[in-house]
Length: 188
Image 1 (tube, rainbow, N blue to C red):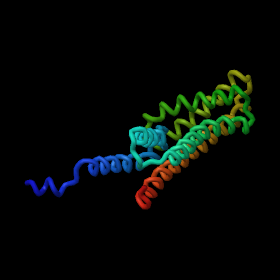
Image 2 (cartoon, rainbow, N blue to C red):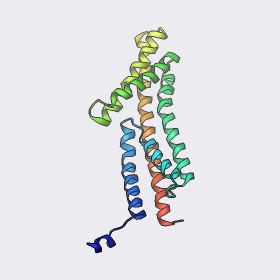
Image 3 (tube, one colour):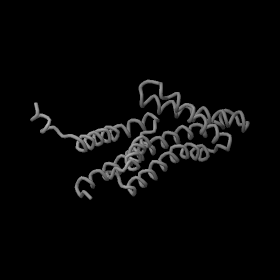
Image 4 (cartoon, helix red, strand yellow):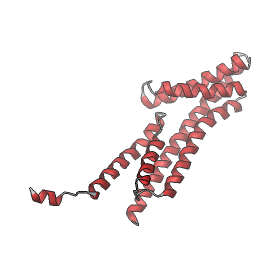
């Protein structure tokens, strides 16, 4: 049995392989989690930041900073596009606030609506629609016909925002994967 102990990797080699396996698994989850409305980008970035703080050299601080900037931009775009679309559709501040609050609340509820990805997207769009419609009819005192256009634009803007977040999450995963690949090709 001693020969088996000599053949199997131990110590740092096992730790590195386990870290790489977990990182690869998280990279595979980034985009599906973002499509569900969950923080996929932030999960991988937290993992990589923890590795960097613990003294791991696999993730460079520059690549980590770039990935954080892309993830933050995706989060901002997700929410701003729905609000901006409400304004573009002729809505006022009450409609914009309604779209923002409605899409946030519906995003949480949408996590539990089947089918997983489609349910989350449709419910978030519905929340933006209902929120903008309610804001325009109740607080801006517009007719239902006048409130319909900004509400439809809010739903479309929320869809565009979710698409932007999913794209930014894919780009974050690509940045982390490229950093790992470059470290593998050109080790320090």
